[in-house]
Image (cartoon, rainbow, N blue to C red; front, top):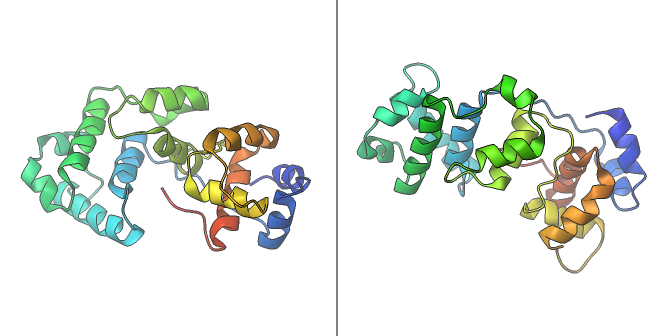
Length: 206
């Protein structure tokens, strides 16, 4: 992340000590097609990283034909075959919805996303069943590398804020969002450091 962002956030009384303890953080945007990124995110929902990786591997093996499964392959797959890959019935439905939007051209491309601001992308993608605001915020951070995203609903971010500010309780999302305005336009970097404060290891993947 930018040196300017580190310098800016280092002046924050609570974040400054975290930044000095953790040191520089590098974030490289994946730049996957939105369809692929969202499919991966849906598969990872409410699963450990290991379990999600296993299911993702089966999903790719069964429907990918040597690459990442295309939307048409997902739409053509039976419910039984999707469940055999380890997907719940609910997640299979979510994946079909994402695949249908992709096949119909209703998903923005990476080029489209470059012309859209964060809230426009959130508004567009959360119309898909099973894709909530948190999922799109992870897409903005890890896939697009957007610099000013604060996922106020994220438990790790809230816990990191609690630790950094030495509070007895985690802040409510609205309180965190209001406080985070002072970190603009570097809220993504603040988010990465709050994750570090929360677990002392690595930021979560999406």
